[in-house]
Length: 428
Image (cartoon, rainbow, N blue to C red; front, side):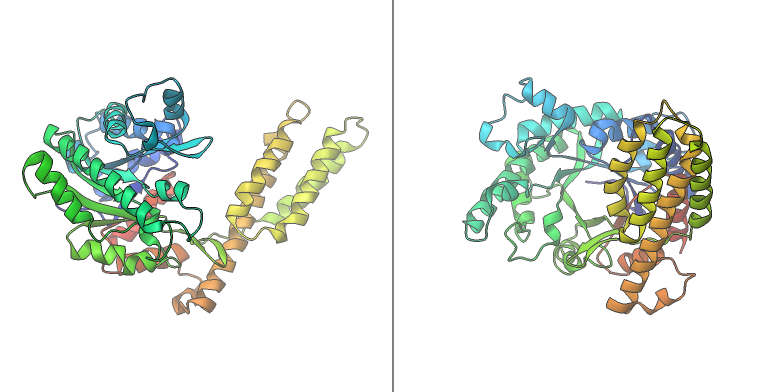
């Protein structure tokens, strides 16, 4: 079982952290300094197509004596996805020992598998990338892909497919008990979005007999009921609380550790919400100066590039009131940057457009955060958010801390400023 007695209340979520990204590297090095009081890392084989794990490996093997040692860190990773490099390996025949019916072909670029042979392959690759001989927790990553692929309507044999999925999980438990015996992992768990669903949802993951299945797996493999099933992971936040009352409560009652992901990105029937506060940007001033500069630049020039860029800036300004949140901006940004790339030879984009693009995004974030604040006050009656000095992220994190069923809240720490925020939250 895990040897770390006390897990930090906030862990490092490595979802968007990659080797080669200097900002990510600096943040991870800072997060694992002893005085930061963070000792949990959570990654996966499919985060940045393995480069997230490679970044972990770089830090774990650093000679920096100001960092926590490997034995002081709770290191968790996950397996299950066949994407990117794994998809290439699959198409090249690397997984031919896996029965074909155990490959879930969810979409052309996203397959899924939790078969024991795949687990062994992925664990070997994870240990190599992270340059460690063991992981503290190996999570099965979203096994409900089997249900999502098989069950298209609630009229189908939901219970039958759920039992098939649970049988596959039992096989994985046996393989992970073997990995415990070999010293490759100390414990295992399940990370599933379906833990947060209602029991009557067709993609719900029935969790009530998972511990019994773990005991049976341990008896078959290691001749003991002292199983290694130690943790569950699920999304939860201010707006998505169902799983806290069901799966998380069950887990805590049965001695399992509860890891929460997506604490600041929330989704419900009203839309998508970034649970964070952002300062007001100097958008109007920068927009006006950018437009004036482009209009001056366009005078006497035959090239249509300047006119096209000027039109783009004006289009973005007209669209600004229609962008409800940062998620919509992230989708729109793809089209914006695609348009900009064709003008790189005619104009210094960084000099001319970078201030405007940065101010535009900052304004989107500010307006979105104000809308979220108002929503939380009106719909959830969170009165403390009427104080503008209270940040939304502070309130969101404290809500999870005070739930009574959460051990670790996983937070993305792609920048050093996010590490600073986590450090302050841990202190309080």
